[in-house]
Image 1 (tube, one colour):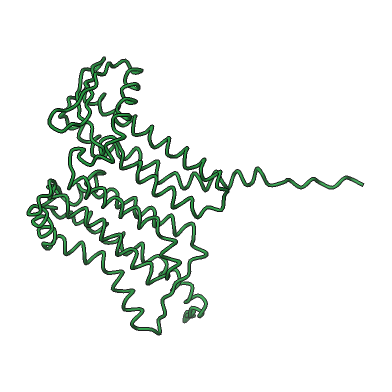
Image 2 (cartoon, helix red, strand yellow):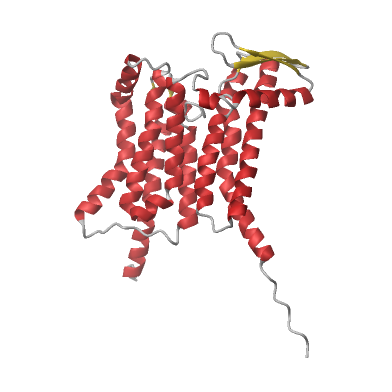
Length: 350
């Protein structure tokens, strides 16, 4: 017998359209980044393949994955309230939205078609120390601008405000990369101010672990140093602000303040959440320095193990905490609200 063909109702069609319009900004960035990882072209100016760049936290693309996570988190938290502003009867509106969605892919293609070389050459001529890292720094900044444009076209001013967190995050990473490229080896004094205290606390942690630490100053760069010796051997490193995790503390501050701003909780609770999160972030950075010294003592300061921890696992400690903390805030706030909710007493038996 002939089967029946069931046509979708106008309501079902609108629901599908609304769903697609909401998720497309996420797909616009996730799809080209996934293609970049799978196709794995050589990133000449980073001196690694594209796939390997996703395995680098510092001066790599792992932060782009956290950027995608924050976009997804914002969608999860505001799915019911966010409304698309796309009018299919307005061709100019639709064309602008489509172009905005294509921009991340077009930019990544242009990078590997020669734009990276132009940026790196200009950076070299401008006297930038880490010129080869500038294309990646600008990629983060461009992604932030494109994302702002996309959510503005899709959801209007309210959407731009609602999605400020991932936009700020990816822009801040680009700014931090740029600062380190222009002022390398701890030359950016405002960020370097916290490093001696962090190093001193790391020396205290190492002391608890049975290591002796001799503080000093690197004569060529002026950066603080620790000369550590203990059960597994000895190691000496100079400590710059990226190594001390100052970037993670700055990222936490921006992410936490922006997230807590929209939370329906008292200002005292916001201060408490921020103070606790900042303290944990800072302590993670202290542990990060202590860990790299123990790895250097065991395997050698120039070992692959040190490089892996320095560029990936160390920064990953703090970033995992930072992106998970908003969920912890939401969960703990909901739990606390239930505990404070007055319980209705059962009626007295007749």
